[in-house]
Length: 371
Image (cartoon, rainbow, N blue to C red; front, side):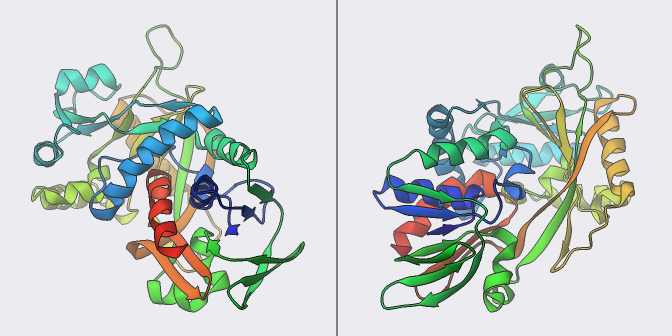
């Protein structure tokens, strides 16, 4: 049994069925509505480091194959990292030296040819060609539908897991639709692991990270419609979020300068980045706040901060907002939770905000050690 039909749960279900197992996915809602559909739809493979980098590039190939099999939109569009200061350009130069062709330096004109950044601010940048984009609102449901059509695959939507009991070589899972016996259980409920195994969550330091995001109209193109922006767009704040950039000694200077010049960005832990959806609108974000139990209120000042910084990045007037939402994901000191809270049950969560990037590569490693 896999508990949770977000991208982490589906990754394990797809992998297990591919190994010839009979798998039941149980999901409390009638569709995925959490972190897996509230994100940028960005496969941020190149900027990872350590085990996350390994999982990411395994996931890349699986995303491309799944897009063909499950028939959803995917763009091998890469990412443009815009450098607007000398220290940011130095970080990119250091990064490109160790990424073996996976990061190509760009001059100012090459950046402006790819993204509609403010010409007065751009010094240079880098292109990360291995990164991809999907529409998470389409891709995750498409994977769930495709999975349900596979031999040995079963999905129980609108079904709540109420508890687990260890048996002799099996686990009894009590659900709102009756009891189920499973030989193995993958608990892939993201930040809600504490609802089932609070001590496991406490030991791992799991909290909830909430983030504010928006969907806005793109700057106008030459023909008057929305400008097509193929790559994802990173900025200097993105360098502070992704571990791959930490190899550069210049990253300290980036943080110190942004703290002095734009303290609001640092206080809100902003990752100013943009991806374009298939309809031409842009996903814009994001802020980060951490708590075991986040408050329900959505500060408008944070949305205004994102909108102001995006307008500065693009040198446009006020951006038209089409949607606003709050994302939430599991956060912990370690990037991944892979724990066994009781015999026969493995709690798995991506605790670093990179579930879409790594889950399809993490799942094979988890199952190798668990089955």
